[in-house]
Amino acid sequence: MNDVGEAARFECPSAQPDMAGARIFGVLTGSESAPRIAYLKSEVRVPLSALKQLGSLAPTQVFRFAASCEEHRCTHFDGKRCRLGDRIVAMLEPIVDALPPCQIRPSCRWFAEQGGAVCLRCPQVVTSIPKADDALNRAATPAE
Image (tube, rainbow, N blue to C red; front, top):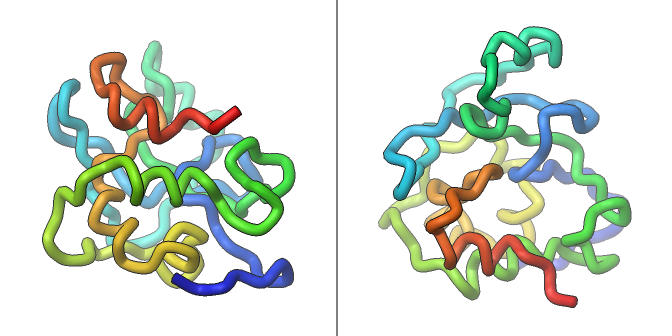
């Protein structure tokens, strides 16, 4: 784990498509009950208007987005760290044995704070969480 300074600029690996600098870095694969992320090899930026072609699907049901970490504007940020990354490591089991190829790792806040432990869990993290996935829902819910 690294000590993350406030001056550093990091990307959120669980961003919304309308966030500043949003880009697609993964595509959802797997099944509804066990979704997985297939990581893209190169950067993809898609205008919000093009995402409307997905019809009734939300962009987060198809893609995983990274964007500039919003820090204090995010419910998961405690002023120094992303608690979502903390909860993912604490509450989810690893699902891969080696770090997956990931284009955002050099700028990823979760990796900067958690190291490779979060990467071993990351392929199961989806923004639109299936209702049946209680572990992921618990990890995504900020502590009150």
